Image (cartoon, rainbow, N blue to C red; front, side, top):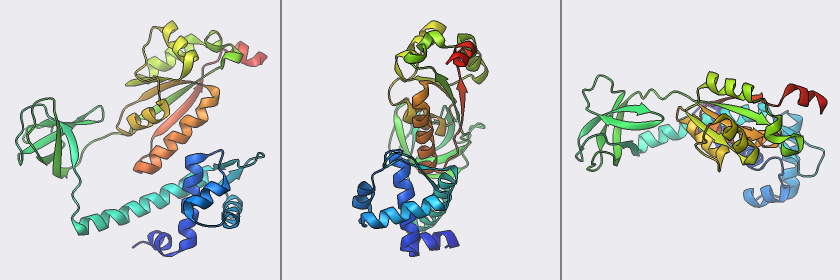
Length: 282
């Protein structure tokens, strides 16, 4: 057990700090002390002391409004470090207990239960190939029979799957009060699209839809795009999303949450698409 694992598992105060940071991440910026108190089973006074101390140490920012808490970059880094450390510990426990994890692939040919198959990845999905295929990245044992196109459970996975990390490009659009799609630099958005070459495109709201219509582009998802974009990127896809300015923070929070959940490191960039002349006059 590493020093970090020892502290988290044996020091109740340190684990409570970890839990509070996670609760803030999930609910920021409107985080009620009573909700944390009820969730963790500690007093509101204790929650208040923890929040104050975490703020003093640079892990939290406290806004001017009531119940306004946000994680700083230092706080997010602290959570990531703790999660990765705990994951390595639980992985060791699972190995000792011999807990098998079922992987899922799409069969490209008929497979029988118990048969060993090779695996390749495409757009974040496993596909079966003959085990002796030169392009095979890994191999596993089929749990059940499967026909071409069916999902297939696998066990005893061996090899190293080459799943690259995708990226997210967030294109910030002006709200309708600032001109909406009429105040968007379409040439700039088109350049973003062609340079980034996204595998998927997400759009949130009418302004973003109007911009896509003007560019002759289609959206792959329009609802729950913060979560969808983060999941797609975690599976190796590059995602371009069009959102109005006030939704950018929500996108970033979801990416950070996804990074913590899967111990990944999804990269993102925010670019402004508002016409320069209009932006300067506001």
